[in-house]
Image 1 (cartoon, helix red, strand yellow):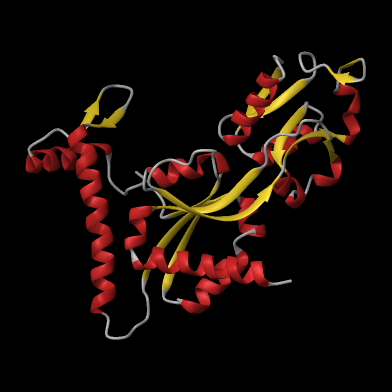
Image 2: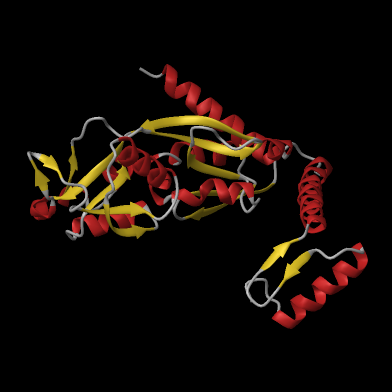
Length: 277
């Protein structure tokens, strides 16, 4: 229904497409639908065709104004703290380009990019970025443990040290925060008491503020949260590995002049920020 087509209509469309291609494009059963090898090749062909169509349309224009659409995925925090100056500069330079912004859990950003759901993503960069992805580093932010100021008693301690096996911990359901938190515990030989697994940093801060346990979030997210005054950072040593946040795109996306123009704006903005005292 999201594509304005009924399930039966979609099935008929897929069948006609598979007949024209001469290969099955999907593996289908009662519980899932996945692309066949031919389907993956066809998906790549469609994406390249759409990209080239956008380039073709821009070349046909009689003036030099850049036109088209740009789809970007980021967290709500990035909208408030990272993107305003970049968006402002891009809109001033290319007012004819339409920007579509999707917001959600930062842990999903790179996956959104790899599945070609978006052209650009703002993401925390893993230690080893996936092949084919280019990025521009924007900033670094510490990854911290937080606790509700009104619920200090929730921390179990032994010999002035936190007893992690008895203190409830709220972890992200997926993503870099979770993997770095798990590595921190593993390096210390700790099996933590995981009280909840939550999608989204904002949801973790909310649960912590209600006294549900200790949480792990990027400091940048905490500083922009409306609940920041109700929680405090737990000072620990060694610290968790900080986040490097960057603007990311697939290398082949930069053949699209709209994506390349946005990329150029980000590079100029970062260069200006570096030289500003």
